[in-house]
Image (tube, rainbow, N blue to C red; front, side, top):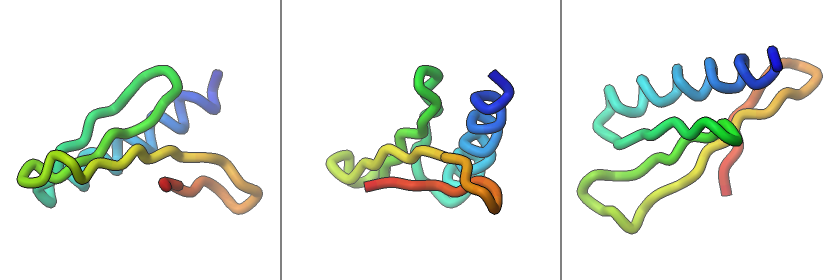
Length: 62
């Protein structure tokens, strides 16, 4: 359970930064992921995940 909270924390931090830069970012709860899009180009969206590795956490997307 703590792992999911950490994942949500990092995705929330990324969402705030992306929104500050003018992108739309929606945090999804289950499974934790972030839907990111350009408000001027609705077809350009991406789903971002955050996963643990031995050195810490990293973001991944398609």
